[in-house]
Amino acid sequence: MTTDRSKELFKRAKRVIPGGVDSPVRAFGSVGGVPRFIARGKGCRVWDVDGNEYIDFVGSWGPLIAGHANPSVLKALRAAMALGTSFGAPTELEIELAEMITGALPSVKKLRFVSSGTEATMSALRLARGATGRERVLKFEGCYHGHVDALLLGAGSGVATLGIPGTPGVPASYADLTIQAPYNDIGAVQQAFERWGNEIACVVVEPLAGNMGCIPPRPGFLKALRECCDRSGALLIFDEVITGFRLAWGGAQKLYRVKPDLTCLGKIVGGGLPAAAYGGRRDLMAQIAPEGPIYQAGTLSGNPLAMAAGLATLGELAKEGTYERLGAISKRMAEGLAEIAREVGVEFTSVAVGGAFGFFFHPGPVHNFADAQQAHAGRFKPFFQSMLEQGIYLAPSPFECGFASLAHKDRDIEAALAAAKVAMRKAARVR
Ligand SMILES: *Cc1c(COP(=O)(O)O)cnc(C)c1O
Image 1 (cartoon, rainbow, N blue to C red):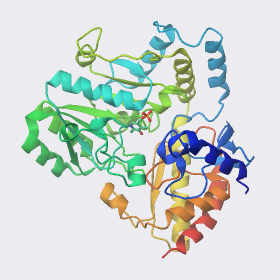
Image 2 (tube, rainbow, N blue to C red):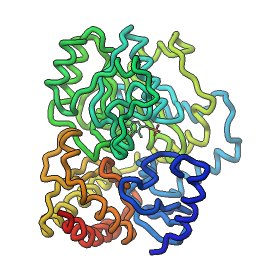
Image 3 (cartoon, rainbow, N blue to C red):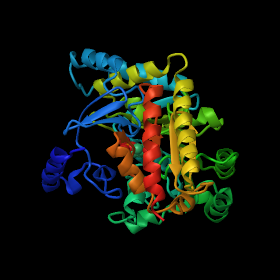
């Protein structure tokens, strides 16, 4: 596999963009090698600038659940584009997408569109603080909620991948308001509430953790969070930027039957264009300007192209049997990988929930970030590199999920597993 052109572009990019990338994990820092500069995508495949073809399990980190260059999404985009790209005035598409989302997530009565998941969590946090008159926030180690000042402490995703502290540039007075607990540890949450109960504005949680690998909530964990919040008057915020429309049509809250007060969405709701949203209880959302006093705004919020792509993507997901299909793909990937690891004799654990899957070079179980960090440090890198060399594009970090799309066919999954047999042997050589 030649990567000359990617190498050349990476060198050029590094001169004008920090690390050569616009989001840190893209630089392949923890897996080594040259990040592939992508030229185009179609279905479940992407092609890099050197002409190499890959079966893609990243899907732009989740949004492309309907596949690259999905015909319905492109058609909707062309139609919207022909009418103009942005107006800074309300449009009908925003209402349509808002209605579709509120129809799917019963806890979301009203929502506000923003342009990124970071904006969604930042705004939900401001709303929680404004509505409760409290300042502290409780989050979980290894959960990532975008690069919001108050939520970077102990963050997953790139912060975990790079092993950086997550606080340079964040005023200590902000960080001091953030309480951290281990994921899935309700005892630690109860202790925090005993200590700071009436100062905690909200608990922010990924209802399935997707930024420290893929770690599902243990039975009862989310319900217990709900109870802690109710007892103290804190709000429960589900960051469903990954899980919304990926685990189920109604997101993690539908799957696990726990109702948050506020929900953050992103990734899939923009269908590959920049759109995200936060929403929830009617009385809370009524406090957002101009209905209420808590300010939040955006020049490109509710952008018609992004709304069109989101609507078309959700339209694809609303079809019969899509979640069964997504579930079957991730399950086959997770089980197939575990089977190969068993054959090769590598300590390994994997999981699949809806359209997401994950794995660790760890005997399991993995319930939190500390467990995830105990995974074999050296094995992911050769595994990843071998997969990539064989044309299988996984997230370039052990702290991310794998994402299934409606465009993956059975033969794509079997091709990925055939490659994994080779890659697993390479991983096994690392002691
Ligand atoms: C990706 C992600 C975000 C941030 O979204 P951006 O659009 O990258 O700002 C927030 N929360 C979770 C759970 C995410 O996975």
